[in-house]
Image (cartoon, rainbow, N blue to C red; front, top):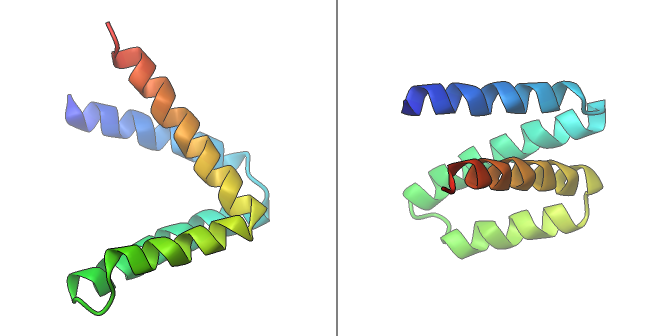
Length: 86
């Protein structure tokens, strides 16, 4: 069940990514890389979680493409939550 849900989310994200402009695709790649690097820094205790969150927020505020990506993700998340509700 969990694997099926994950595949469904991945398929939905892939279809959304195909609709993005090149700049927006770059924003998705940047966001993924930023998250991975930040997680490694936090795990190795070279950065506090709130430090990378602050840098992520600054980047989002200055980049419309990143903001659009996060809004799309947020929309998908809440659509899934609505499907789960009885």
